Image 1 (tube, rainbow, N blue to C red):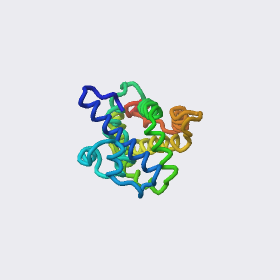
Image 2 (cartoon, one colour):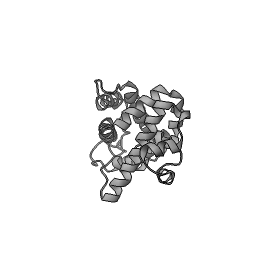
Image 3 (cartoon, helix red, strand yellow):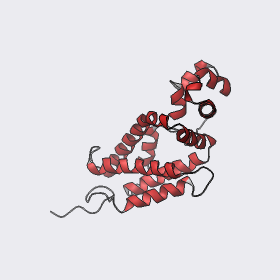
Image 4 (cartoon, rainbow, N blue to C red):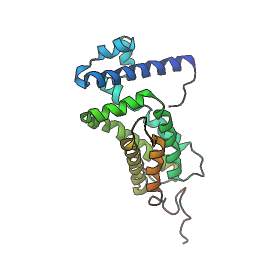
Length: 207
């Protein structure tokens, strides 16, 4: 979540976060089925029209990605060219986790999903979009096709490392989320070496 530039962007982001925070807080207090869009708007101090400028449904306010998948993918592409694929992924996701762990909204959302595991299938679509963005970014970095097995497997494994870190994280208790993510990524490093001849991989075999 890069700091927005300009007053209008800051105000829009503040409104989005106020709605997200209100939705998550009410979901935890009353349960997902006990909350309406009107309840969320009242808690955030905005109109229903404003709510629907940001989210299509109450669930989206709670479960949508904190950052657009395409934006995260671009961060991966923009990492220094001499970084290997896993290093680029590690740096981008670690930076994202450092931002998230500093917010009450993220902690509350994590606790909500643990309290209401029936919500987890609704997160799947956002996770698929994130994995696709990671795969496309890896393809651009390595020069491999987006459907290459290395690209797809590495993208899926990185998303798995994200999920493992989140699953092991206890808000307010060590180790912190970033540390857990680095540990998960350490597990992958030795196994997911880029193919020889790809950008970030070893030298191409001689003819």
